[in-house]
Amino acid sequence: MPSQDLEGVWTVLATTPPASGIEVAPTGNAVAAGEVLVGVDHLSRRHLLIPLLPGEAARTDTKGRGVHLARLSHGSTAYLTVLCLLPELHHVFTQFCRELIDTVAGASSPAREAAVALDRWRALFSDADRRGLVSDEVLTGLLGELLIVERLLRLGAPGDLRFWCGPFHELHDIRSASHAIEVKATLVREGRIVSISSVDQLQEPAGSDLLLVHTRLDTDPAGFNLSDLVHRNLEAGAHRREIDRRLHELGIAAGDLTPYAARRFSVPEVRFYDVVGFAFPRLLRSSFAEGDVPPGTLRIGYAIDLTNEPPQPLDQAEIDLALTALATEAASEVDP
Image (cartoon, rainbow, N blue to C red):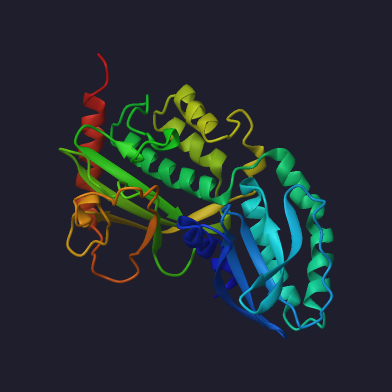
């Protein structure tokens, strides 16, 4: 697994965290004692697991608030795990793990190198914690939604943004009376694996259609950042107070987006899908024998794979028609 895919693998593992212990996946990178793994535990915390040789010394470190080193056994192997305790540190932790994988490859003592690397990165973890940056998942999700909101505004959708529901944790991100859109954005460069948070997320609302948008973002020093995208939406007609309200709901201080200034992106790919279209993979309540989830089921999350076709994405004419219809309907719903 290329190191840039760490974020995507953690995201997929987190869709169904284990009831106890840890769920792991290979990284495709190895040290003398075996393969380095990534994992998510029963508390949805992220791990990078470095295997240890029998009797190998490994320093543990639990003094930091955000990242710890600990010993962990999985199967018959002992590991030094690098553990992220705070979701708001996910972006910095991913960067750290990418570097760490390269550092420990070929090292005579991977465990010692991990401890040295953590000492070197400690200040960055503390700085990110103090600034209260939102996680990669929150930021990429927000950017994906803002890109669709901008397109709708330029097609005449109302500046009060009543159609943009994602930040308020409603079932679908974009909604008018008879149209709905679920937006998924990712930094993973390979494949199109989409995490679905509930059995209802891909159920079209009564009397409505439902599209899923899969947006691939790339980190790009010459691209746009959050502040740029907010400004573009304001230029397209969004009301400042409504954007600020949604940013606040996500834990972002709308008055100061400087902490996100260096996070710049480009958009290499956007695909729209009709979830009721041919061969679109989804799990609904009606998928179960009794027409609903089994009694006692508390949570269902799953992932779908849109890497191959079918399902076929919508063509540009179909996308334009769908967005125009939603924008027009949203504008007609504005109070006189």
